[in-house]
Amino acid sequence: MTQSIYTAITFAPVQGFIEKSRKLRDLYGSSFVLSYLARALCDAAQDQNCTVVSPALINLTQGTPNQIILSGNFPKAAAKTAFNLAWKALIEACRQAIEKRLPTFTYRWQRAWEACGNHAWEFFWAQTHEQHSNDPDRIGDVRRRLNEKKRSRDWTGLNWSGESSTLSGADAIAWHRMTDKFNSKIDSIAQQTEDQKEFYAALSQEFSDAIIAPNERLSILELIKRLITLDAIADKLNLQSDQRPSVEIPNTFRDLNRHQDHNWTGWFQGDGDRVGEYLKQQVEAGKDEATALHQFSQAMMDWGKNLKFKLPPDSGRIITQVETIFRHSLSAAAPDLSTQECLKWFYTFPQIWNTHQQNITVSVGFVWTAPGVPQRDVLQHCREAEKSAKDSGRDRIAIRILFNGGNFLEWACPWWFLPVLKDYRDRNQQTGDKANWTHILQDVATLEARHAFQANDRVALALFKIYFGEKHHAILANEPQRWNQADQSGILGDESRFTTEQSKQQALNQWVINLANVGFHLHRSKTATTATVEPAIAV
Image 1 (cartoon, one colour):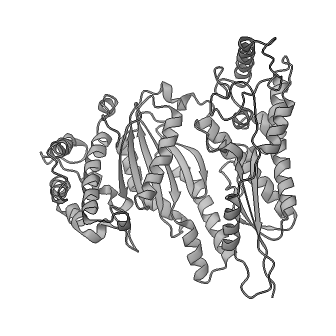
Image 2 (spheres, one colour; image 1 turned 180 degrees about the vertical axis):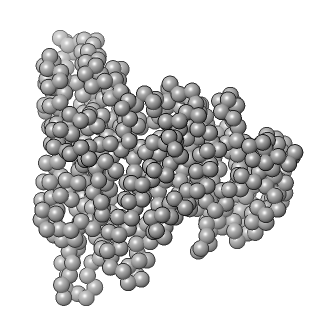
Image 3 (spheres, one colour; image 1 turned 90 degrees about the vertical axis):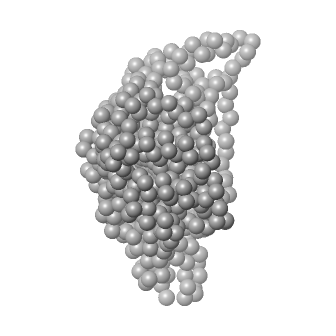
């Protein structure tokens, strides 16, 4: 019988220079670099009569996953050659752009750029085994084999002398004489520092300080992530206008500069849950594996393409997104956006998510951030909040209030129970915008001081009933609805995380306490929130 050959390819940056992007301008560039290299591999594979199973849509501006599944024989040597050619073309375009636009400097850095071209990436390749049985390898088998190869790292680290970059500290500062040998007898560190200062001042002036700030000192890889967003680089790569990096890249990054922001802003990141299990179930139900993967990839890419049209009007910006993974900022374009407007949108998010018609859930981390928190910290908290949503049981949102000192409050809730926030009723029976969340916060503080939550969960349930009503209390008091079931996520997530009855009761207590703390900060006015005194102990 004729058996399909499947080829799986992925690539990973040495020293994680993509993952370590901790500023928005770097994330834009990183997303494009990954997409550009993935497209180069897909194009080369198609030239060898392979069919691209996943990603279904190759889109540089929207984002393309860097795990590629092909139907057909794409030899490792040919794939590696195509990858290397694309990467070296990209870095050469960046180097030549600098040398052309800053011709007054004498450049002695060619060797460093060549080393970057040869040693910046790990490349992984796997293929179906040759066999003649009636049970051939499937795509899932090849993907597992690829993941096994990723566990065996094979890369060469680059040594350097002198100071490291100010962004990640993981590589040498890129400047025009970076390969010169430093002789302590005749060379001056002060003079070298001054030369670097002059070079970066010229870079900033030529390419604008929105791309490179004069006080930054970047590595070659970090420079590439910045310069790749420029039209001049796209011209050298022969990219058409619709292929250029435009994942909502602003004309300037000043409007996203957290240090100049006086308003609280919202940021969120999400990811689909258990995608691998979902695809496996489709195959077990009789669907062709390649067809299932291709259709899933197509549906998710189409969903991501349309998501920007479903954000609150004039309030959000897409940062990066690839299939089921997405990262966004809210209120970057609308500084007066309130937490209430954000919450109203999140109440509808399950319906927005389900428009892709794939039977998977989603976990999201939403971070409401104080003014002045550095971008790198905000992005890190987005990642952590999304992970917290998954760790708390998936199919939910984790809401994190992030203060200037780095402390935060967090509360996680399944999507179906999130509207409980709308039904809060204070002691004066006020609801909605008129409700005073200080009432429940004060009660929680008093009860905690008296250690009332330590014995059992009766106090927490009674308090919840007072402020959220009989209907919601009946749900929370019903034990099966606290835990994940086959057909519905539980309020507290997976029951298996808790080994004793006491730990289960304490989980409910903490959930109610976190609800009071986070709800209070979400429902304060912008003026009040700005004046908030952060908690003494981080949650």
